[in-house]
Amino acid sequence: MTHRFPIRVYYEDTDMAGIVYHANYLKFIERARSDWVKEQGLDQNAMREDEGIVFVVRRIEADYLMTAKYDDALEVRTTVKSMTGVRLVMSQEVVRGEEVIFRAEVTAVCVTREGQPARLPAALRQRVH
Image 1 (cartoon, rainbow, N blue to C red):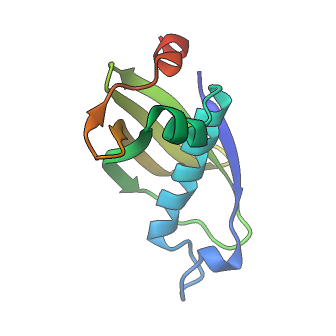
Image 2 (cartoon, rainbow, N blue to C red):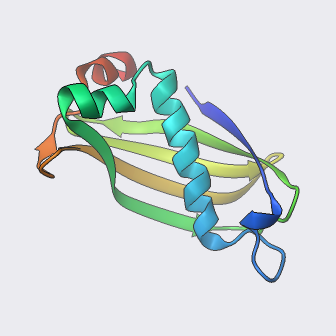
Image 3 (tube, one colour):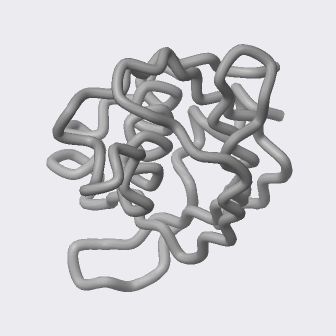
């Protein structure tokens, strides 16, 4: 199942050349992942407060394929590639129409308040598998 998250490119997203600044793609895919987590029925504030765990990105591999410009309508498409008890790997693409302009593979894990590894929430593991 693919999660879809719309993005509009604003002036603040662009650099001096008028194209989306490279670091902003990471912000776009972060917003999409946060929306995906919420869609899975998880409240990240409650996870932190009640269970003492938070999601963190462990690894990102990214490919910049084309440029996006001011006022472009983009969509972030997120799919779960694999999941274990402690690791979630997602494939994310930023598309304009049907053109893939950015692609990333993101590995997320959970950690405790002390920064120690923790299992992914059971509700997420049950819902995704």
